[in-house]
Amino acid sequence: MVVSRSLFDEVMVPNYAPAQIIPVKGEGSRLWDQAGKEYIDFAGGIAVNCLGHCHPALVGALKTQADKLWHLSNVLTNEPALLLAKALVDHTFAEKVYFANSGAEANEAALKLARRYAKDKYGEHKDQIIAFKQGFHGRTFFTVTVGGQPAYSDGFGPKPEGIEHAEFNNLDSLRALINANTCAVMVEPMQGEGGVMPATAEFIKGVRELCDANNALLIFDEVQTGVGRTGELYAYMAYGVTPDILTTAKALGGGFPIGAMLTTTEIAKHLVVGTHGSTYGGNPLACAVALAAVTTVNTPEVLNGVTHKAELFKRELQRINDKYQLFSEIRGMGLLIGAVLNADYAGKARDIMLAGAEHGVMTLVAGMNVVRFAPSLVIPDADIVAGMARLEQAIAQIAAPTAKQA
Ligand SMILES: *Cc1c(COP(=O)(O)O)cnc(C)c1O
Image 1 (cartoon, protein in one colour):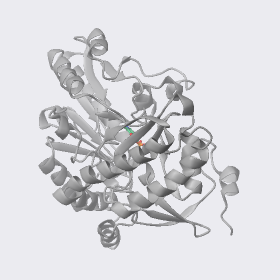
Image 2 (tube, helix red, strand yellow; image 1 turned 30 degrees about the vertical axis):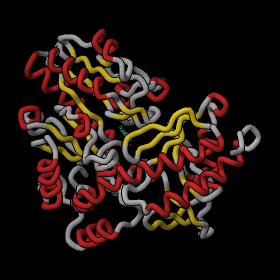
Image 3 (spheres, rainbow, N blue to C red; image 1 turned 180 degrees about the horizontal axis):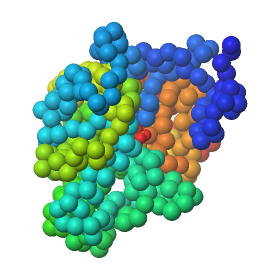
Image 4 (cartoon, protein in one colour; image 1 turned 180 degrees about the vertical axis):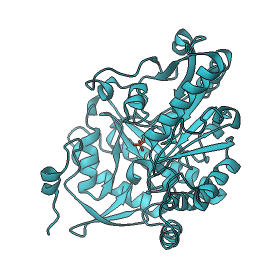
């Protein structure tokens, strides 16, 4: 049977609008589509493929585990899950780990834990959750309501209650909302979907202080920033501010679905037997791959490499911008980079992404005005340079009429 893009429209729920091309193979930072056309991947499956496509360490871990044991359920525990939990505990603030299958599920667990902890310790009234406008925490009804983009949560009937939104990077706005009934504040150290916007250090420190003053738990959603993306294993390490709960997914599995919630023993003890769970959570295949991903990423070579590659990435974007003047700002942390379009190119992020794909480079958007890049953490420098040359061709096509030629 010929598999074509039109089959998508025939058999898939229309909640996505995928590109016309269908990639069939990936290796490192390169992809090939059905026609054999090659692409350089600056998207990384939306910050997931932290070691590129088919990294030998991940393929090896998957194949080895595939011959041993696939699934048990949580009626039994398994070696890969315990080894991964031990690695996460050893290398972060956390003392306890809960496994899920996605970022939204990790956040769902974090929010339920925060509510349960506050109820046990302070009483039913302490149920307020504060998150931030333009934040993104997943698509379950609880997490999408906590996310600060009503367009994603409206239209599905009554929403979970007790959720409020403050302005990101604005402590006064949080101060105005937080109170003795606040059970948790959920925040991304750098907003990803919301436009690649890093939190300022004062903001993150201030959020921690306000949480402490109000006996509220601080939840860092590191689903997009975690596992080396910013040049640290987790972004909180660069801020020097420790959360009470941290969620991680996306890059954790390097392309295999897994999510995790990390916390302390003191907080974790409130999720007693029977209070929460997941059939696939802690799946041996997922945990074996994730252990290989975390072990490979959490080395000075890879983490220092992120910082170096991010500089090269930004330099190349700046070079293109010097010529075509379409970005007002190039921002981000590590290899999560946003190029913000100026007023002349407002709304054109998707056009640039599509033109890029035509020229053989995969990029992402974050809203209508930000071109987003989340390449492999080990992308070769030569692929960065080659991909930028392709992106420049794409931009030249879009920007030519108004560009100030260098
Ligand atoms: C992608 C993302 C999620 C949702 O993760 P899923 O695996 O799609 O459920 C949650 N939070 C942040 C910050 C994300 O970037």
